[in-house]
Structures are given as C-alpha cells and as structure tokens.
Image (cartoon, rainbow, N blue to C red; front, side, top):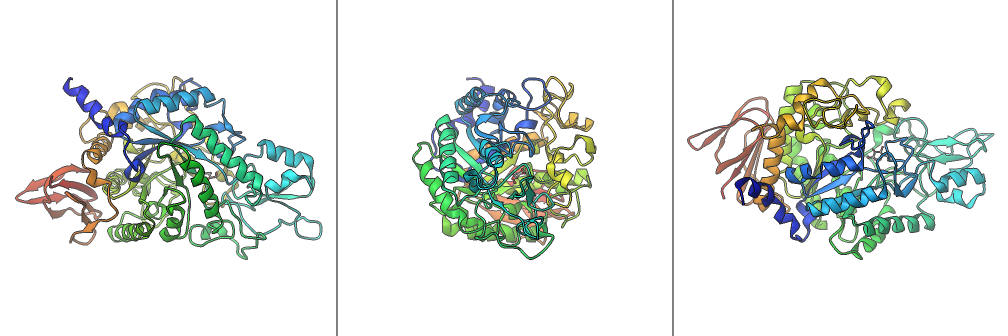
Length: 553
Ligand code: GLC
C-alpha cells in the first residue's frame, strides 16, 4: 500500500466499523442541496451533483451529511415548504437519485441525515389544497389551523401572532376564513392535535428509514404544538422575543410527547439512527429537554452559535451547556454556521452584539482569522459538531447581493427575523475558473463573487495552512485522538483574561480571543493551530485571535 493510499484510507476504517453511539462525537456536514454542486448544468444544485462530491466529504473527514430539504416543493422557502414528503423535487432529481446517493454515501462510510419539516407544509400540499377547495367546514381544515376572523366582519386576524418572516401570522382566504402560518403564507402550520397529522408523520419517518437514512434533522422542532386556544401574546414586535421566552407557539411542553412517539419508531430500526432538533429555545436548559433519553439524540446549541467571539461569554455558554446536558446524558451539539444565519467568518468580522443576521462585510481578514480560531475551539469541545458547507473554505457571507437575485421570502416581507439568508446560500466554488467556479457547467442561481476563485477547493487543496487543510487536519486529529470529542466535561486551566485554556485527557486547547498575542506554557507538542505560533523554551507565543491544540500523547 503506498503512503498516499494509506493516508487517504486510514481515517475511514474508524467509521466503517460500526462504532457504538457514533453520533455522540460525530462531525456532521450540512449540505444545502441548491448550492453544493450542480450535476445537470441548470444553475441549481442537485442530488447528482452531491453524489459526485461525496468523496470530497469522505476526504474532509466528516462522519455524516445532513441534507437540507430536496422534496417536491414550490420553493417558496427554498424547499422548507414541502408539497410531497415522499417525493424528490424534479429540480433536485428523483427518488432513484436519492436512493443512489444514500447507497454511495454508505459505501464511503458516510451516514446520511435528511431534513423533516413537520411544523408546516406547502400551501400546495394535497391536504391543504383540498382543505381550501372544500371550503369552511371541510374536515381537512382541521389538519391545519383555520379560524374565522375577529372584528365585525371577521376582517381581523384570529389572534395577534406575527410571522417569523414579518407581518401577521394569518392569511385570509376569499371564503372569509383565516389560516395560520408562522412563516410565509405559503407555509400553513399543521394542527398537531389532529391524529391524522401524527399518523402521517410517523409514516413519513418510516418511508425514509426504509430508504436507509441514518436520521432526521427536525425543522422548527419547537413549533409543532400551539398553546390551547391560540391565545394572544398581547405585544407587538414579537420577533424580538423569539428565543428569549416560551411563546404560545414555540417551545410548548406538548412537543415532547410527539418526540417520544417518534423515538419509538426510530428504535425499531437497526443501525443507531438519530434525530437532531432545530429547537430555538430560551435557554440551554430548555434545549436539554428535547434530548432526554426517550426523546431526540441531539439539539443544536443555538446559544453557542449566538455567542460573540469573547472568552468570558464563550466559557459561560460552554459551562452552562455541559451542565445542562449532563443530567439527561446527551452530548452537547456545537454549531457555528448554517443556512439561516450569517456565516461565522462574517459575524466575527463585525463588532459584537449584532446578532446572527449581519448586513456588512466588516474586516474580512479579522473575521476569517477568528472564524478559524472559533472552529478549532468548537472541535476541541466534548460532543458532536455541525459544519455548514463552505465554512471549511472560510467563505464569508455575500452581503451585497442585488435585490433582483434574492430569494429569501423573509427579505420581501420585511421587519421579520430573517431576510438576509441568501448571503450564506451562495453556491460553493470548487475550482479557480469556469462559469460558476466548478459548481456546475453553467452559471449559479446566486452570483458568486470573483474573489471566491482563490477560496475554491482547488485553490486551497494541499496548501499548508489553508482553511481547508486546517479543517482536514482537525477532523483527522479528532479521529486519531478520541479524547477530543469524548466525555462531557472540560478541565479549565488558568489563563490570562481573554484566553480560554482547557484540558481534555491528553490534550489541551488554548484559544486567544484577544487582539494581542499571549504567551502560553507549552502543554505538550503543538498538534494544530489556526495561525502561526512560535515555540521557545517551554513556551508558545499564541498570536491574536488564534487557537492552538496541544497533545501530551
Ligand atoms: C427553519 C429552517 C429555515 C426555514 C424555516 C421554516 O428555521 O432552517 O430555513 O425558513 O425553518 O421552515
């Protein structure tokens, strides 16, 4: 076996052999199908494109892939408006392509997690279309939230809830009734009190489990159950409250019974399949409720994602997370970027306190430097981590997309929570040249900046110190040093203000979040660093905004 062959093959053996509780420390890579790779040259990513790039993901060293929705959908919210949960949208391919993708991934030792969207369907879903067509009194209307309006002629919405995307959460039909949509009007909310809804979703779970998927990411997992009687919130500008409070439409305790039922379905299947919740809750303690032993496996740690690049704040959220997860026995699930937030390279390029939707490029070099440091910090923490496609290239958000190319429905409704999500959804540059930098044979559905040529996979591959190589080394190190992801605790070491230092078995991580370089004791050999470190006489100089991994092994 040649040297090169060994290097490429070695990391896979750990995954190929079934590893108990594989998900507890797994690194899972989010693919956003529209923007990953275009296999048929129509400017839109697809399943064929993803299949053609699976070996890249294998070589990157991730354990699993989570695919954002590729189901039949009018694409009012980029596929999070599903018209048929058991069909693939023609723009992404066919069910046969999905089957082939799952098989190919498994052959390469990669697990596949698909997105499940149970809070709402598309307004083009068969049930909703019939409910509308049949008019008031139709039993199908009970599967959604249809209500008469308030006011003398029913001209006012049934309650004061606002859509996450801006505007009222209700739309009135010509027949006079209103229906509830927490997101866009094209995304009517299901009524989870109706037994047919639960039956249907358990059947959808089985459909994809039978197809061989290894798990589900549950969209808006905190939203399915609404408070009895749909009570008014009594305040305007509700978007401000999201994530800070239990709302009558979010994080209601009733959701947990649904997940207990789902868990029983999943556990009938062999192969350690998993659920991960997208649950924006007011606290890590509330998030922990979703991952009790008889419910879901993981829940994204959005408190961590929302934390600025600041040592004290990071330490507080890390401690609090680990404490909250310990009693339920679930792993922490770290994440820095996804398809709904400004990429962390851009968040950290801007002043702190701006939240997760940022409209300015900021200091790009600083942002990248901090993003790399933040990634190494995250990958040194106990538990599982999610990566969002393109972060391994250090991609920034594209903040200056022209209005006419934008597709985020929230952008057009204004005043909502989201709106600037197209900036993190721009297709991936694979090569230095070509009509869409290797994304496909023609253009791409959102324009890529010219500077992305030098951020492409081709430009970074094999280049020591590139962001791509840093990610590859970090993921290889996680496989080689099981201490890195294992356990549920960190041992904090003394460190100057603005610096985090912690031990995890035979391994120490030092993250300097300040703008100055600091001197750290050498805690063993430098295994990896996000910037250039200099070592001398038992000490290591850690430059500003840099993370270093040491090993004593
Ligand atoms: C989730 C998705 C987001 C989508 C919303 C409505 O938050 O991640 O992209 O717009 O749900 O489905």
